[in-house]
Image 1 (spheres, rainbow, N blue to C red):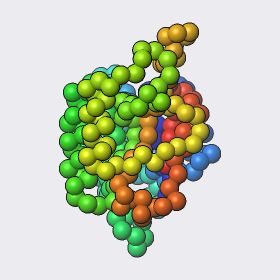
Image 2: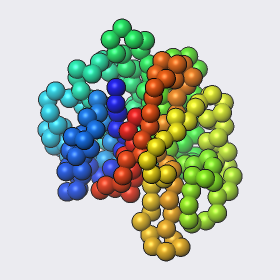
Image 3: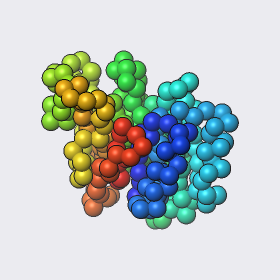
Image 4: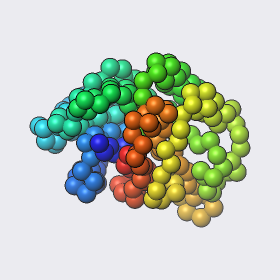
Length: 231
């Protein structure tokens, strides 16, 4: 199974549709998760009509011009059940053939570290259930100075320590990546230009045992300040 996760910075802009179609054409994913769609109400209905009927579709409305998540998947790729939703994540149970069901948490973490605490708490409760689990998406936080270039010097602020604690307490394993080193750029010029690795994938040891040949690739940035990631 292949999945693409992408903070597209607006699924209603003109550059989105051709970029998304190209991603699907080239990589042939089974599941696509779009973050920061900035869509709600009728605009989501319009987005649904643009997808083939052979794909499932679930959307979380944006709040004004921020947020919004869309999950879309091939109906023949297996069984996907969405059982919990918030502005920061969509949690799914995925079943493939005779294999053991596993949990997929598609994460779009708030830029406010105080709001992220709720996300860390909810995800931790899921991990405690002991099912194989993949947690991937835009975490809006880094935990290592090697994950940043430019801008203010990295420091172990409270938000960083809380992120590190979430990872270590739950025994989450960073799946690593190939492709570009960073997944986000602020698109500023000169000394103000900042690069960070905000988009990534973590998994429990049980998930890795089920899928030892997993691979994560950072794809080139297109039509957004974030790179899509292919898992």
